[in-house]
Amino acid sequence: MTPDGVREELARGLLGVGYTGLTPVQRSVVDLMAAESPTGHGPALVEDRTFWDRLADRVARVGGSWTFLGAFGLAMTAWVATNLLLARWAFDPYPFIFLNLVLSTVAAVQAPVILMSQNRQAARDRQAAEHDYRVNLRAELEIMRLHDRLQLSETQLQRIEAALAALGPSTPAFPVDEAPRA
Image (cartoon, rainbow, N blue to C red; front, side, top):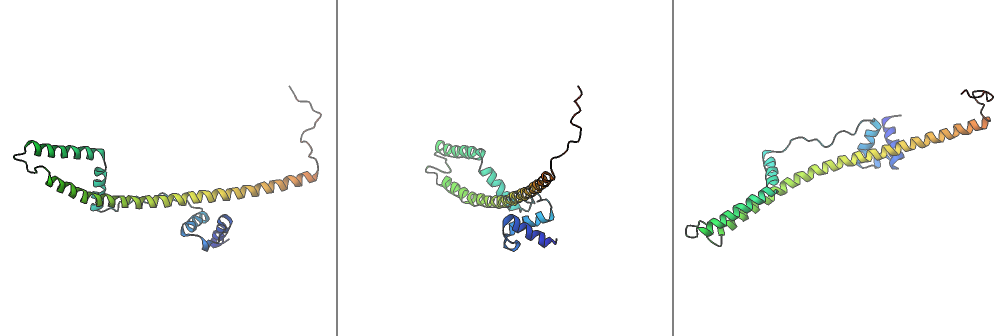
């Protein structure tokens, strides 16, 4: 049978649709089954991030940690305490307008950087999910195929048993009158 015929037979037998009616993911799984090749490893872990991407990931990793929150809380407490205790020489007297500017700037810069990092992580997660889907679909189709083969074998075995039963009672391989030895 030609490779196209095998693909068409697998698609119709397992999915009930012709090969051309399958989605691209389903086609790739049927192709792998027809070629009897492994699904392959997960999504490629190629380091294709730029310097700025790596920096954004580092900022997101640090900015989303308890260490950052603790250090930031200590820095704010020190800032406020210093400016309250040294009110006469304070570089940012109450109501801490410069502190508000610093906090707004940190938030304005940190938020988009974290979002960029999350977008890249979401893209990697989508690739991993698609790979998992392909592996799971292939496993399900292979199980269906094995089930069909097992049913065919069972049917053939039943036909053989029926043919043997039609031949008559079987004769024992050893004489019945011999007593077993103790």
